[in-house]
Image 1 (tube, rainbow, N blue to C red):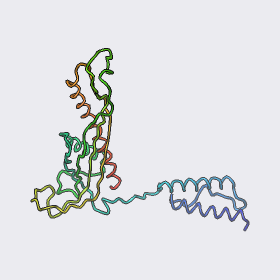
Image 2: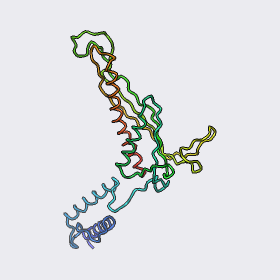
Image 3: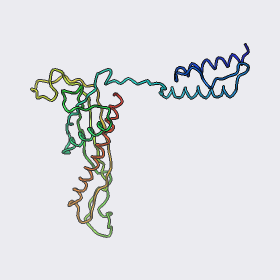
Length: 251
């Protein structure tokens, strides 16, 4: 058997094997090679196909329905989650309700993680702690530089920009089967909850400060607080979406 004919048959065998593995086909249209001579165009097409297949396999793509096993559902049996109201460890009142609503909205829109209304119906409980929810001056200037510049006022330092920070810790726990979750216990009793997963998510955003000449301390603080509330709401939405995406990897 001549060299080109043997090479053509080996190429046809390899290509047929690849096609049968990935597509379930018996024949390869790229390998209609003559027994007498090696078709150059067919060989080039075959080489391009092999390179393309190698790239897809290296990137993790699979032609047939392979599925990546998940940790929570298959290994730990977690399919239903109860969302507990986060603990507020900050001086910002009501931020725990904001986080709770945003997390619930993110999970319902994703439609992959099932939330239940009662902890006794859940396989695990998602707990949260709001570590920080505050804002500090990020940019300062003199009151004389505030518009209108020609209007004279007292010389004080004012903030033209603030930095709002939101830090929330989350953990997924498997409650103690002998003690109902959330029940009141004595000081010497501690439920043996198993921590399955945990993370801490932080978001920082800037917002402009409100300053008016001749009215320092009157309306500026209220407007700045209102802008802080708006910024924290946007940060809560981003934190909740990142939490949902992080858990989605394991479901």
